[in-house]
Structures are given as structure tokens and as C-alpha cells.
Length: 336
Image 1 (tube, helix red, strand yellow):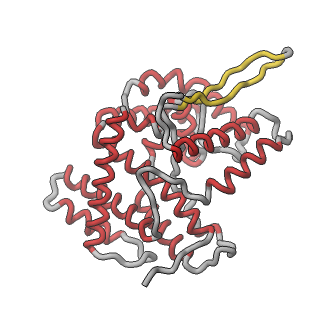
Image 2: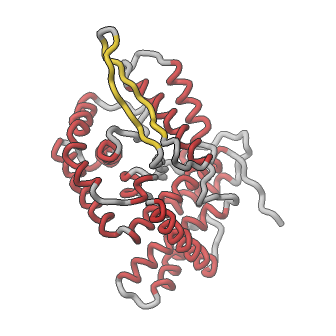
Image 3: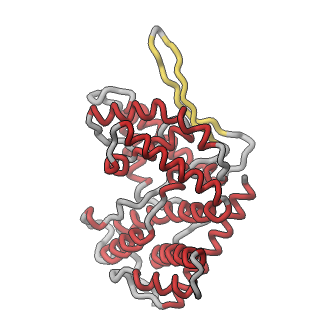
């Protein structure tokens, strides 16, 4: 007997969020395994950047809730923020603090940070790699969303409280693409030029290229709006942003490495990562039977809202996570 198909906004949002988050999570663990020294050095710099914001006057809560670390790491790695902050209204004092911090953060930390070679940073922002997601939160949020999604038809409105809004979805990069911003003088005024440079000889998969172009369209539209007064209307930017949010947030992207075709795969991928994390921890700590203990831990925290699973399923999920992480290590190191 086939399972009932789930088709509504809540399910598609969850599938999209998890589909985007999983490649990041595999890349984080692959980097920790293959480039542990470099990853640890970047984590130390991450702590320095946090202290830098605090010296400027930001609180711990502001740093986390307002995405200060994303803004800073983007400036260090790329030259300016790519973090999605369109629509956020900052008080003048906070906006001043952000602008002061970003004006200097690249000069302070860029040379130190970019000396540590992490191949995954060719495809993911360092901020995403260093901060990632909480697997227990993702498991609970996904289980709750799936439980509720079974009760809705495609045309139904869904209460926002059921959406998994706190899942970190990475902004993808590519070694064959570079963002560029420059200024020129025209008729006595300064005009910014903003775009992307594409390597015409480097290989792009079609899904990857489409994803990069979609992201650029968002960045272009958001940048247009940010450079205009709040009261100014920019119909081009508004239409581009509306199109981005109406499609990108609900339509799961194709991905070369991770494809979710069934709704139970949402939970199995997350459970496998949680189990693998505990397995590596117990192995490092020298526990007897680390894999068995990791499986038990995962079963213990498995959300009650989800369809119950057996020990053999968690073991299979954990093994699948290990295989994907190892494949990710091979692929990233080969591309480096």
C-alpha cells in the first residue's frame, strides 16, 4: 500500500528547507574530518569576530538574532554581505554599529582567515560552514511540520507556527563565479555597478548554474533597494524579490548529491546525521561500542510527533550518512 501523498505549502517549505540544509551539513562534517586543523583555526577566528562585535557595543543576543556573524564573515570572505536581510528594519543606532563594524572587519580578519584552505568554502559561505544547524532542533521541527502537513489540502492556509523557520539554508558559492561591485562617475554623480563574473571554461551543472543565477537576481534586487531611500519605489526590485520568494522558498532545488523523493527521507537524513555526530563523539572519547550508544541516543531523542522507528532503521540511516560524508570528502578534495 502506498503512502498518502502530502501536497501543501507546509510540506513543500519543509522539503525545500531540509533539501537545502543537508548538503551543507554533509560538507561541514566532511570538512571537520578532512581539514580538522584548518576548521579549528576558523572556529577560533569566529570567536575573535564575535568578541570584535561585542567590543563595538553589540550584545550576544543582537549578534545572534540580527545575523552579525553572517554579515562579518561574508565581508571577510566575499567583500560584502550576501546574507538575506531584505525587509529587516534596523534602528539607526544598530545600523550605525553594523556599518562601523563591516567597514573594518575585512581588514582585520581577512588575511588570517583566508590562509586556511577549506575546499568546501569554494561552494559554501564560511559563515554557513562554521555555524550550521542543530540536528535535534531540525528533527523536532521536521517531525512537527510533517505531522501537521498530513492534515492539510493543497489549497489550505497553514498556521505559521508549524513552519520550520529556523533551519539554516546555505547561500551557495561556486569557484567559477565571483561577485563584483565597482563605482564609476557619471554626470557628476557616483554610480555603482554590481554583477557576477563567470568562468567560461569551468564546468557547471545545470542545476548549480540556475541556482547561482537565481541567487544573483536576489542579491541584485536587494542591493538596488538598499541603495535607495526607504520611501522610494523600485518596481524592478520589488518584482524580482517577489518572484524569488514566491518560488525559491517553496520549490525544492535539484541537487547533485542530495535528492529527497519521499517524505520519510526527510527524517531519515536528519536522524542519520544526529547518530553519526554522536558516534564520532563517543569514538573520540574512547567509549566502548560507540556506534551502539549513538543509535540508542538517537532513538531516545527521536521526536514523539514522528512515526516511530526501529533500531535497525537508525543504524541504516547512520551508515547512509557516513557514506555521503565520505563521498563528500572525496568530491571536495578532488575539486580543490
